[in-house]
Image (tube, rainbow, N blue to C red; front, side, top):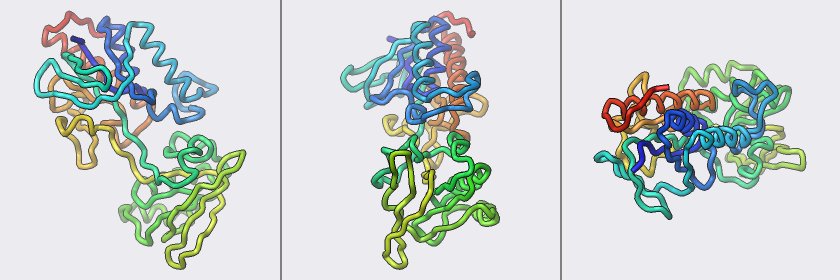
Length: 314
């Protein structure tokens, strides 16, 4: 029996672990086979406070993990295959370990960026391919960039990237865009954005120094074309990692967990959500860490109110 189990080890889950471990609750943190969240696929992080010279994403996550361990958090590596949230204590089934019990649960499993699945894409993440304009746009100052997508996210990222890029080419496999009218109008009014519509991305082309461009098929002619660029931003959306919950927690229409405004409380008392799994707007490491702190404090207060353990909120 555990006071708290934390599922997920991105900035949100690890911040929760630090706070709960310092409160003497010895949380168990369950991390998947690729712990650390999306930051482990990021090279240099320059917008996380406290690192004036920047820090590598994997190093930042490793430091947060060590900090949680220092205060007594325990870690377990494995897939959560099933949860039972119908009654407390909650049951979490981990592949290779069986069933675990906990009085409270913090879900910080994040959201995975959708990829196209074309050759050269995943292997060049961090070498010119990105899914986060806010995170990586600065590194492409004065360079030509491609944004792939046709929704609001693609329009927003394309507009944002014009702050840095010399030119942004927006590639979409259809002639029509899914983005809202106002987002399309903003993008079309931006002189730095050019359009390559009705083109299907085929391959990310890279060399020794990183991305060189994108190979596409012109759907009108059937011919292959090559668009030169030093950066490619894939903006086709994110998928919140909630499948293992099997619909036991309330979500919005896109699958993100719903929390009570101003808290990290879900619709099940004793279950809290933090980080990108409940945030489809900001999706930043620092905002995820902030909600991780909130989840830990909400969890402490819940345990105290239910007289499970004497807790001093810190």
